[in-house]
Image (cartoon, rainbow, N blue to C red; front, side, top):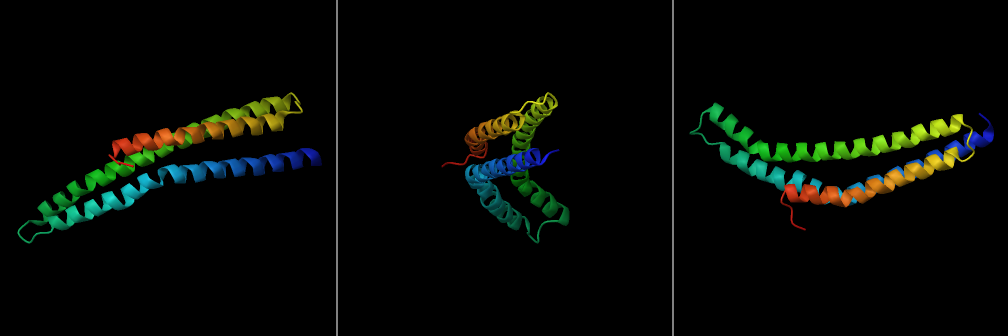
Length: 148
């Protein structure tokens, strides 16, 4: 690989890192209220519920069952959030892999615009993912009954 191609790849890599950072910032912006709801509102409800389970008149098994029952809403919400984030990440990864595959094919054909095309494709994939975040956040807020 010549020096020009190496420099071009390094610049492209830096641009992609910058774009991926934009996705992270956008995700944090849109999803912070949801994570806050799970981490504080639902955990607080869990601890209050679990506290009520501890009664000296109850048997240990009853207490254990009660505490487990209290954890279900929190556990379900965290699992739903994690699943939705995993799907979002998987969609982004697949989209970026398509760009990388196109770049590999273009590079084999010695297209001079291969690197720029790959960066442009990746940028479009990232922008499309960022556009999905409000919809994802809205769906999660609706499923967790979070009012803005």
